[in-house]
Amino acid sequence: MKKLGIGISPALLKENYKMHWYLPVLIFLGYFFTGIFPLIMNMESLGILPEENTYSRWPNYALNSLENENPFFIVGMVGAPLLIALIIFGYYHKQEKAFALVSQPYSRLKVFTTQIFTGLTMMAIPLILIGAIYMAFSGKIFHYIPAGTAEDSEAVAIEAVVTLARVIKWFVEDFIIMMFLRTHFFIRDFLGVIV
Image (tube, rainbow, N blue to C red):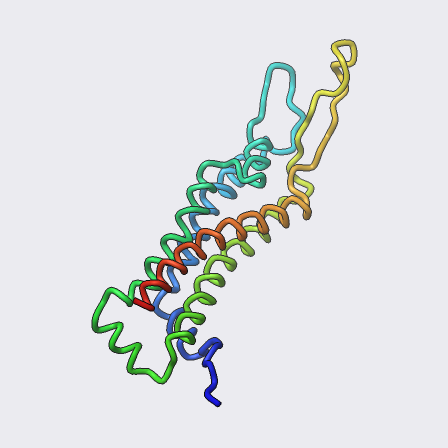
């Protein structure tokens, strides 16, 4: 009975990381400079109780980023899977690369599953790192909400913006959205392999 050849090739995986190491770096830098860097630059206004007629937008910026309402994060969630799919599966469109890969002792299915695993890890690594950096802000960013009525205008409710639950929720949502888009591109590429 013939084996199916399903699995991940460590050698091919290593080669993918050597050739495309810049993809997770670009994704990380995109998320860092649109989500974390503005918070670092405005650390002095993150946890200070706003005085009358002043407003600090940075706690709301952090909250919007963790709720996936930051427009730059939305572009990243859509752009990262597309970029990874186009580059990792780009060897199908280059004759010399396709011949070199076909001449290796790997089945098409093993090559495909290795490429899928490469893409998923290249999306997960930057998200894990950004989540860890967000956790460094845990307990440092507060959202002040006016509580009560007009007579009780002095009272405020203090809510921590960055919590473990919010960071985990952000990671899971981002990864699921990226995986869904990535799966769409995988299906398209898989059909290209079959034909």
